[in-house]
Length: 215
Image (cartoon, rainbow, N blue to C red; front, side, top):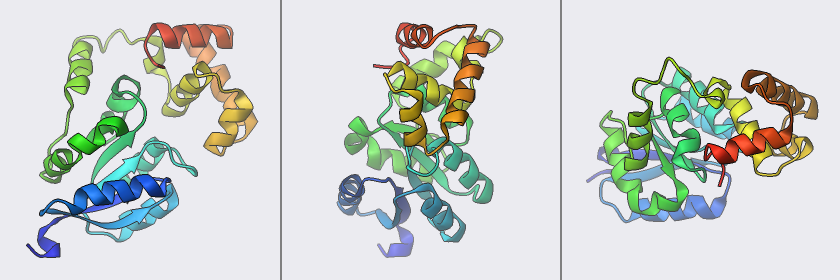
């Protein structure tokens, strides 16, 4: 099988060791090849403009821009590429949001080694890759669209801020990790409290734990 006959994949993650591990998994297949890699959103977007790759493995936590924002932008400039989101977060935190934003699938990094190859083959055919965990979440949401849980009204950035506050990060910590200003994160926090009708960080944390949004 020649290179052009194989499923061509781009790997996007800011950790070189993880990229190397993913490349090693793909190197052991006969029909998939990693042709490019990127360590941040800017590089990923540049590759998406130039590439003919069928699939992109995209980390949800990038140093210069959130993976969710990057997903939406790349699907806008290159709608033909299937994006498989990789994340350290559980499916019930980001999977449905990712799928609604254009992702072809969502994999937790903990299970990536066993599911990755099959997931790539599925999304390369233009299909969605849905794990049993995500299927259960989607099934539970059927018929519930008219009554959204408070956290489902949040934007992606607000939701990300919620989970980080609930995980014990300060506004300053979150600003640094997301490469945003403290003022911006404080604005997200204020919006969250208003939308969810809560008053304090402790309320946010209690809500997140009660709804299994954090470990």
